[in-house]
Image (cartoon, rainbow, N blue to C red; front, top):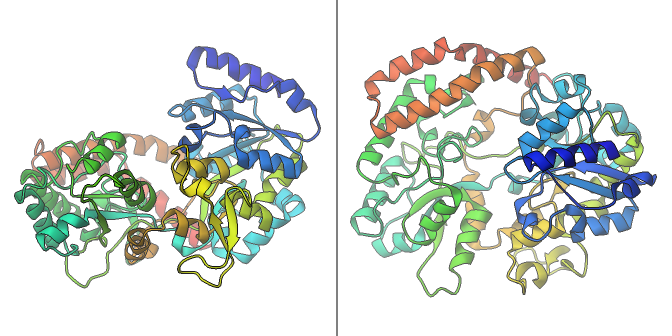
Length: 533
């Protein structure tokens, strides 16, 4: 293990891709109850610490279990490069935290066959009673964290209830709607009227804004299929049609209908012209400065963060969630954002770990009743207390965050404090609890948003976490790398008028020549195998 840290530290001298906690590694790894874990440091934790070892959460966990952990953290923005360097070195820590379906070429089965991580089935049964019990009592989640062959590849992150699976959708300036006598839009026609009113009233020049196109869920992400694409019963990416078959949205004729309407909004000045390149900080600034009246974002880092930023400013500023739009009033939105109960992120034990039972002991604690409370709420009497009068849930025993978390005297946000005391604010080896989200998203506007955005057909039309065989994965990587770039370039050109929509057929023809039909075949095979699990 000492060789690992020396190798990575040497690489860091040249590439700047590593931070570590500065411990004497030989002393740390020499003891019998010690582990080394590689994981990206969450942004909201990095505001306060350079290693998870310095957080109250992991200090408390070490006190409870008497297991000393040395953390290896790649700097933000260089996670993939550092991971690839580590794999190429063939010098591995005891545990790696990674989204294994999308974060390892070929997925978890390939990581196992490559000798990177172990097959976890036997060790889970033998050494992880809490994790095993959770899977047995939650078969849907268990199905989502296995491969097609039934292989378990780590200790996964789970969302413990439906309230935790919806957290993203359309939002508007409620104060502007009220001032102009407008209702929350439902149909695409409603949206055009609202956006036009925002513009013509002088509220802002281009009222509908997005983040950088290849990052923004509202346009491009396959996870929520695009808030303004889904009304046309299609998607930016792959989806499942009403017949249970995998489709690729840009091959649908109705994808052109989306492009036609959205281009008309762009030409009328209803869409921020910087939507192609607008980064997160600039996007947030546009909202807070009143340059946008409508956007698509999160309950916490969207609605909550923006209202927090405007608290005490004396300005009129309010936000309301809108349902995912439809073409015809009364219809149910075709798709929307919906997370899975079982997530692909998992702490996986590597083949070079010589303390597998100890690793399981440390990881399995996160799924015990005590470990779940610790990972969701932190330390009793410090970050939370038990109450039975939490608003809206009176009579229930409730872990309520203290003022340290909610009204931090150092000016840290709840998210930043959550990065020190919990894993529920991001993800990790535990089960996220609903009591967390009702405090994180504690405003009526946020709670309403969760209910509003949940009313979609996402459960039928989103692809589940399917896996591919190594051979399929190779074809996917080769074909989709080119298709993704081409799709993004052409959609931008269509929307901005650089390419006439009369060439849409030629665009589809080229997608087929590039091999998209083979990709659909692979995705369908993966879906069929998933359904047969």
